[in-house]
Image (cartoon, rainbow, N blue to C red; front, top):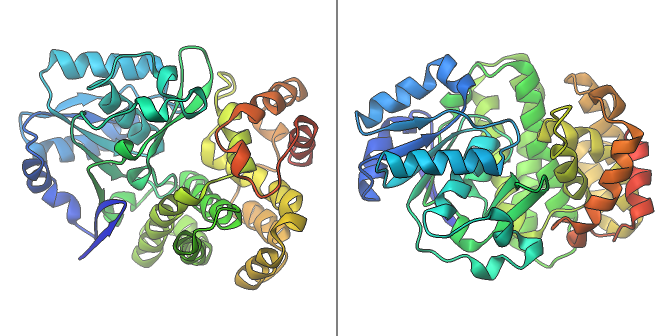
Length: 370
C-alpha cells in the first residue's frame, strides 16, 4: 500500500480499515468518538468499525445532510460526557466536516462563526486540539485531506472554517468502504470530486503542483465515474473515484471558485435539503461558460482531456448519470436564487474564481443553471 505525505498523512488501499486500531494507538487515542450518520449505522458499517476499535468507541450518529452548528455542539457534548480523547470521522463530507468542527471545539470556545474564514477566523485557530482520523465512505468531497470544515452556523449561514490546523491527523482511504454505494449517491459525490478538480485547475493562483494533481484527479474521475455508477462492485472504478476525490481536495490549496461560492449558500437552505455534490454538478456547465474567456489556454486543455467543449461534456455527463436537469428540478425558486446571488459575494470562494463575479453575474449563472 502507498503512503503519501502531502499536507497530511494518507493511508490508502483496499482493506486498510483493518488497521484503524493501530493508527488510533499511534495517536494515543483510547476512547474515540465516531462521528457518523444514521445511514451508516443502518448499513452495519458503524458496528464493523466500532468492533475494530472495541468497547472504548462512542458513536454520534446525528450528522445532518448539511452539518449544522447545533449538531456539532451536540456531538461535542457527547464527546465530553463520555470522556473521549480523539475522533473518527466516518462517512461522507458531512460527517467528516462535523468531526472537524467538533475537534475544533476541543480546544476553542464557540460560536463557530468566530472561526469562519470570512470573519477573520483563520488566525484564531491553533493546534491544541484532539487527534482526528478521517475515514471517507464516499468518493466526493475529499474532506479527509482538506483544511476546511463547511458548517451551517447558528445564524443560518453555510461558512468555511479554514486553517492548516484543521487537516485531519490521518486520512484512512479504503476504497472497499465505497463498494455497493447506490448509483445516485455515487453519481452525486463523484461529480463533486470532478467539480473540485475542474475548479482548482481554473483558479488563477500560481501553484503548478496543485494544477498537476487536479488534472490527474480529473482524468481519474472522468474516466471512472460511469463505470462506478453502473457497477458498485467495480474495484478499479471505485479506486479511481477515491483517488479523484482526494486529489481534488489536495488541490484546494489553489482555491475553488464560483461553483462553490453558489453551492455553499444553496446548501444552507433548510428546505429543500440540497446535496452539495449534486449542486456542483448542476452549476458546473454554467460556471464553465462564465469562466471561458478568463481561463484562456486552460479551456483548450480541458477540452483536450474531456474530448469536447467542457461545458457541453459535463452537461452530457450529468444527464447520462442521472443528475437533475437544473436547479428548478431540485426545488430552487427564483426567490432563493435572488437571495443566494447576494450571499455568494460573501463566500470564501468568491475571490478565487478566475473571473470575479458581481451579484448580477451570480444571478445570471443561477438562471443559466436553472
